[in-house]
Image (cartoon, rainbow, N blue to C red):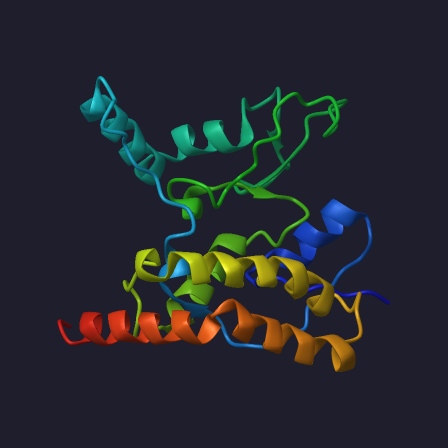
Length: 214
């Protein structure tokens, strides 16, 4: 038996099973929550150098309102890259004779742009996956600091040092590659040596100022 840490959302067991070829299940450690990082993880924007921002914005709006446009970008061309499962308006699969290796279009990033509630559902997922996503999002705990963004400029050196420590220790500890009894104390001390207390104090100062305006 093996395990790994992951952000959880509807469809994760199926995604993991499809990626690894091994049946996967989940054990939820914390309830669903939303903060600035999770909400802002994927953001569309129009660069200031764009020559026709109005038309770009029109296209972005279509990704939130037009199922045909959205699914063409996510799944490709119907009949070439995907086809509907017989009897279902939501479920899709590969056309006859087509596989993931021969499809030629594998974006499938339903989370990356637009309104994922418009998405067709790959037939390895529950047909009501979009409804499960909506329920999941609606019931998520909202952070009181939702909207707050930490400016690391005043503690730039310390923040970089802390991140380097996180990069060294986090994944090995999360995945059981190194002994936590031995290495967790080292991890904590190395974070202190890198200046994490200074970073926390500065972040708290900024958060207090932000909260005072709300």
